Length: 314
Image (tube, rainbow, N blue to C red; front, top):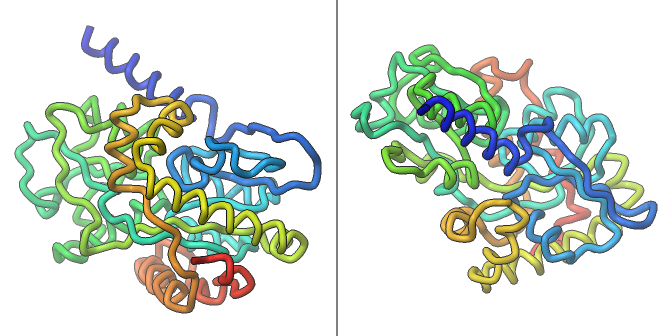
């Protein structure tokens, strides 16, 4: 009976967050020649979509940043929203893009989850244990920084790369000892018996980045600038109206309003200034991945910050 309930819960999660039918689905807007935007349900772009603030846009839904950057590489979208690691893995894979926008840090919206019954007191207690996470996503960098902070190496744990829809059932069924995950999957997993072992506070900024395909950046510059201004305005509205934001996003997320509100309280952040310091921050992350040979050699991500779009930031 317990197994049946777990399987049912996993199926509900997969359907709710887009994991059941693959990594993406498309909601086409009317009109031709508009921007094609890839989003994840919980990022800042999802509020723009849910409010209908960008008419003429074609929206494509992705379960994770790595899946979104694959679409960017294939030329299937013009703009996409990811965490801090996907741009680095995309650059290493020779994806042609620039960075056009960035959010303020959101360190509390990604965390290491464990079962309270296991008795873990700190991240160091996971030495020799199995840890699940989505490869190439924001939580991949969090893992590396937590290892560093605890004087541990990647070889000190058994890493299991699982997409969010795979990670939840593996965690629920005790097939892994810990799950490193971001909101709203994080908030949905906060059930009785689940403990937050650590979040990114003090170790990783966990920003949201807007990536633009290189061709689109040149051909649709003014459209993209206009969209970025809309994105900033909608994001600011959400920060100032948290109750209304949760009401708008809960149907889009297909999760209850209370969970949506709890997750947004730690995850939603204003748009930040796009400047050289952002390039420095990303470059340090890229060098970290390269140093551990998790990407094939060094990549120059600092140069991808595009000054054409800095004026659209606050």
